[in-house]
Amino acid sequence: MNDIILMKQGEIILKGQNKREFERKLISNIKRSFEPFGKFNIYSLQSTIYVEPIGNCDMESTLEVAQTIFGVLSVTRAAACKKDKDEILKIAEKYLEGELNNAKTFKVESKRADKRFPMSSIELSQFIGGELHNKYPHLKPDMYNPEFTVHIEVRDLAAYIHGPALAGAGGLPVGTGGKMITLLSGGIDSPVASYMMAKRGVQLIPVHFYSFPYTSVQAKEKVETLTKDLQKYCGRMRVIMIPFTHIQEEIRKKCPEGLLTVIMRRFMMRIAEQLANHHGCSALVTGDNLGQVASQTAEALSVSEECVKLPVFRPLIAFDKKEIVDIARKINTFDTSIQPFEDCCTVFTPQKPRTKPKLYEVLNAEVDLDIDGLVAEAIELRE
Ligand code: ATP
Ligand code: MG
Image 1: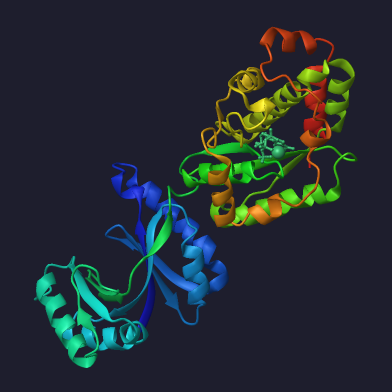
Image 2: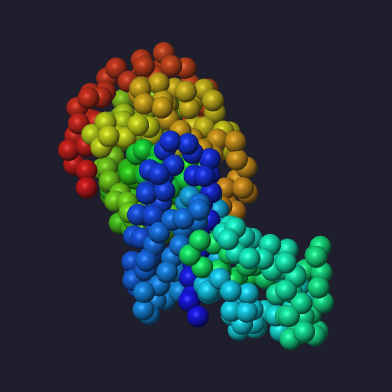
């Protein structure tokens, strides 16, 4: 029996001229993700990616990882067999034995992409359904709400037999949406924001600002762990660490306390933009969320981004905290994010941050700072 994984393409199928390019990127992402689990023959036919193991492969792990790859609508582990009704029956009985024994009701759903196959889809379903019912008399046919559905797909190269498909990760293949800088703190929100942008095909470069010795080594390690966890979805990433202490001390010395946070944010934006230009990135991404804290009012956000030209994308802007937490749990970043290591912003949080800072006040407050020098120094000292 030929064990195989079928990955149905998602939105890619709606692409016109660019479809081939999206498909090529998807296949190369899949190949890289499956490398640890063995050797595979991977190819695309009829909007489906076929993953055939060559020799011994860890199919369980492959199936699990298959569900984290963006650009895929659904994932199925299937048995491939000859396009012959008796062969299909034999394999279906064997391959789905456990499920057929456990279910009380069932139906067979066939799809005939290869029109040369001598039976219609309905005829094939009726034949296989009737024979399975004879073999497993406890199984009652139920066309509307079956406990278990046997799927048969007669395609170009072979017939494929499987149970219900698993949900894929959706989205578009990472790398098809260009590159962006993501501002990754150690919090709950920015890893989720990164995940959301990667889902739309963006290749991300994370940037983290740390304030040694006010923040600990563990705070940096936490961000490295988050980056590693996100790679499952986002592809290979290396985080750029920016020392931020000097900038924060300068701001604290020379600017009014109520404006500390927004001025600090502006420095993050300026540094991120320079890195973006250096790495050929088209935008910046943050985990900001409207109204969550003082620095996330519409006024504060617009002052924060006034100093950069690149667009700033904030995919979580209209999410509720609970919705963000649900995604953080799903992608397994939540437990790391809630580890209690101080972030550079927490350490320098003013008592009473201004919720509606005015641009002219902020520009006034910044006159005593050597902005270009501080930005250049931080970038020079990046790790
Ligand atoms: P998060 O949960 O992502 O930390 P938050 O709700 O705590 O977000 P803020 O601390 O105000 O919000 O940060 C807003 C956004 O600014 C973050 O989502 C992140 O994109 C960016 N940011 C904040 N601190 C840092 C940092 N130390 N390094 C990199 N980016 C940061
Ligand atoms: Mg934070």
